[in-house]
Image (cartoon, rainbow, N blue to C red; front, side, top):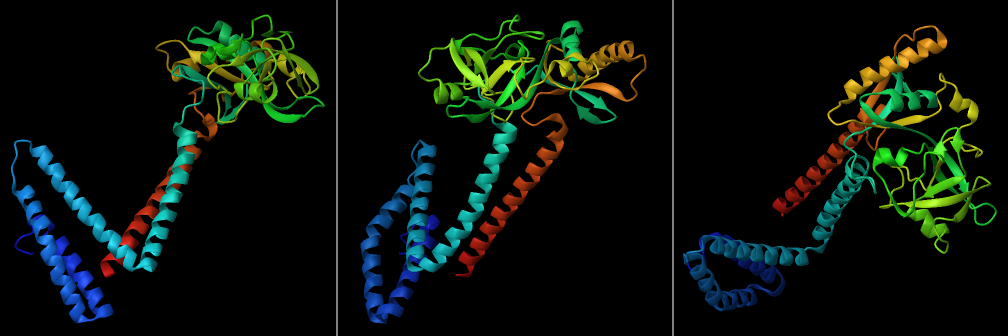
Length: 376
């Protein structure tokens, strides 16, 4: 058998025979084990010689020969592993459990990292120029006022458009099956900034969602439409939000539920008189800080350039309003991301550290299993 077998498979075949012979000798006696051994050698000679002939044959297609040898070796490995595991079920269960725990932990952590850092937001396809705009006072980030957000979008030469928005949980459905959904009060250009359209109906017009000119209308997600308004025509359906009846004019396309990881189902005009949302007083003061700002840069403009221009613009407006300069005040512009700019570095570092940790756990599990196999 040693002379007939190809060199690449010789050790596998002889080790298999020797291991099985040892097990049978301990169980059935040396005589029966020898008879089994020679019967296996005799019946295996023809297949082994055929395998040697294939391995020694040199066809013109070398890739095909290499693939055949790899498959043959893989088959032998699998057969040997199956017999080994069947004879030692306890060892097999321990090895499989060790690897399963390590692989499961890696899969769970990678899924979380992928969802937070890499997975695209449904409905968003053109986000290259989208930026988040915030107030930075001596390193502390905060919201901006609605008048400043409007001025930045209207007077900036580097920013194409700026949308203002305000988050709030909303009660949807009135007295009949009420449920809490995340709502977003936005200016009419919010969907334009993100390049999001509708699958049904239409988006806000400037007359409906440019404070103080607002009307009781709403754009909803496809998720909410299926859950609450599947049997009603859109546009034209009525949705009760925090006790206020709103006319649904459109459904966001592509499964869009907002530009962050928090799913939003109801979009209403910023400044609409709905309990829980921004009031007239908070939207009128230039020194207030009631809204977040989302913008889109013009082609070729960097966030640093936009930040310098907007800081100069806003500083001049605040100086004219208050009569005193703001020390340490600037407008910070960051590329849009699923994680807010203030927490982006910390979240990325934490998730990377956790991913590295579970990767080390998987490596240790593989080393432990390899050590157990070698010790056997």
